[in-house]
Length: 279
Image (cartoon, rainbow, N blue to C red):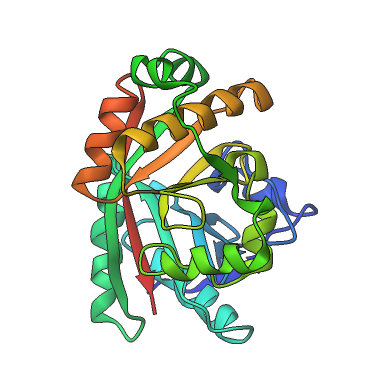
């Protein structure tokens, strides 16, 4: 491995590492960014991660092409993993979209399993980016607006009911830090409908804000597909009113949710996402 020096990147030295950072990069309280440079002062790479809930999320890893295959990427990960373990030993997740560049990252993360630093592919899935226009023109949703009767705002339900709902769906949707999760949700877009008054959940939708000002359709649950379409249509219509420039993000983590996304949002752009967990 090449002999490297590592330094935390902040507002004072950020310009020195501009060549290895994304164009829209910003520092922040919840993000730590580390840069690597060699003995001659040549900037070789950078890695950035942030704390979200009970996990660290690796959102940037880049090594200059001329410096690759010298152990710099794994060295950067070793450094941040040691940093994380000195704080709170939560798992570190890497998220990256499939492309020629990211396919190489996929192989790199798998190779970490041969090192003391263990890495496993948590899962891979399709991610749909639904633009304002795609949301406003979806023929399936337009047809269903106003058909989601009997719905209630999740956060206006009594606390006991909210906790009961979360415990009922925890097999599919786990909320570990309730306070942080509630702060990230859009109350007007988190809705529930019941099969009958005081009965079982018929449909449930959660929408959360993302750091980049996108809206994430983070959870859909239904025992009645037709009512789900009505509920989703009403939530989407409200999202367009509240967030006129909204882009909705939806992760299709199984075949059923992928088919649902393609049916509802035929014009949405999709990418394949790999998620690696470093433990």
